[in-house]
Length: 285
Ligand code: ATR
Image (cartoon, rainbow, N blue to C red; front, side, top):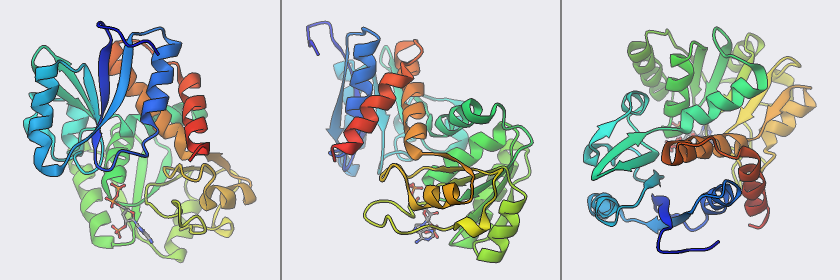
């Protein structure tokens, strides 16, 4: 990478950010596309978020990804927020335009793009979404907005109920909710085309854990995990055992990154180069 006086800076604010695979993924994309951009990380404490956003304006940084713990707190310091990010209530990508900052959320788009590539459209498809945290919000809103028949199930049932009712209201697409027990999950999966895990279950160092086992799955199911470390989670192993199609979490990460790349550069992202760099970075951990 050649840093010159003309190099444009983009990056990531969050805490912790040391283990992020976004820098190798995005820098590979800039290199592949021959763009004079560099992606760096900025560790930002919660108390400093407003100053950090002013820094983007002052230093004329092109754009920023936002991660934990700032995704839902940056909103109030932005000048404009895209409609989907507004509904989700969280921003993971910021673009600077002059001294103005606009917020977007590409987390849900990452899942949508991945699913569209795998199975075409998701309209009227039955999707079971596990979880009701930040990731589930972004995915749930995006899928419901795009016409999926969504059912949400969460360990803490009250959170699933709240999220289902909020999405139903804001998207005019009725979202169901079921308790997270084996009997209910099995029944819902039998009627589903797609199962998405948006909880942290199965993430390193708890690789042995899964919310669903192969005996509850079927051959016509597509199973997607947002957990990408390990690359093949226990849930995806169980899905393979059942003969279901699997989509690893790294694919969503790459597609959300590709959507950020497009917002900043106006160009289509080189997804293959991003995938290879992300996979390599993950292996090197
Ligand atoms: P994120 O922003 O990554 O979604 P989060 O907001 O902390 O993180 O949400 C984590 C999700 O994983 C929640 O849905 C959580 O369920 P609860 O709402 O009941 O806490 C889910 N989760 C975490 N550990 C779990 C476990 N062992 N079993 C079932 N669900 C779990």
